[in-house]
Amino acid sequence: MPAQPEAIADRLVELETAIRDPATPDAVVAPLAHQQQVIYRVLARQTALATAVLQHLPPKWQQVARRHLKARRHFLAMHRGPARAVLPAWRIIEPRPAEELLRHYREASSATGIPWEVLAAVNLVESAMGRIDGVSVANAHGPMQFLPSTWAERGIGKGGDIRDPRDAIHAAARYLVRRGGLRDIRQGLWGYNNSDHYGSAVLAYAALLRDDPAVYRGFYHWQVHVATSAGDVWLPVGYSQRAPVNVSTYLSQRPEAAPTRSR
Image (cartoon, rainbow, N blue to C red; front, side):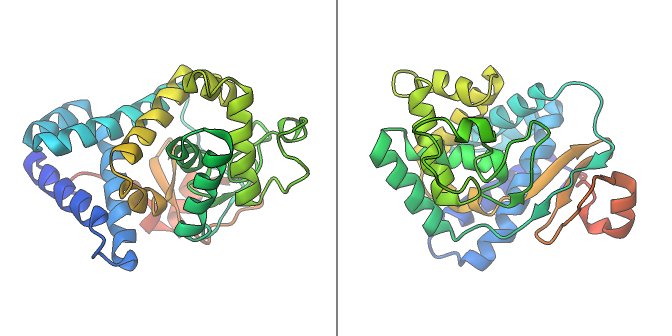
């Protein structure tokens, strides 16, 4: 990542433009999207640098960057207290194909009225589009992170597989409806996660998708990063731990996963 605000702004414009361009092959989009993700994660924590970068962005991309930073900062606000010193006992796997997931979001939206962009944003923030195969500290499971008790509620899981993307996406749409999402999507998201920060972050990502559905290409390729005492540690596809692992131990074995610094 460049050190100077103007260079960071130029790079963001390049990344945002290439990700949205249908002529950019998917194999090329993947590393570009990861760069985009990392830059926004760094800027979300470095307020002064972010302000300087925004001043160098054209108005079109300022609005985009502000929404990314808004979402990330809301997530940071949710996690106060000591940073974790261990990495979770997860497997990181390849997600289902982008078009398949997009079809599930749109089908669930047609069936319930919940915007597909909201379902995609929830899938993004809950499991990085299904990359995280593991159980949360709250005992949530699957790509949409359902508690088994919620999944078992009448009309939610409907006997499906909590770990199956299609079943989980449709169940999430039904659950958002049950929690009042058709009247007020913020109310529905509060039912999904009892935090105003969560709802604001999800809706910021959903707004980016609504304004330009091509943003989905980038989100689909975002990777799993975990905020730790050492910074944001990358857990690539293939990461697999049956028990929590010390951050420093992991980084000694996988130095490429170390947090990105501006330079």
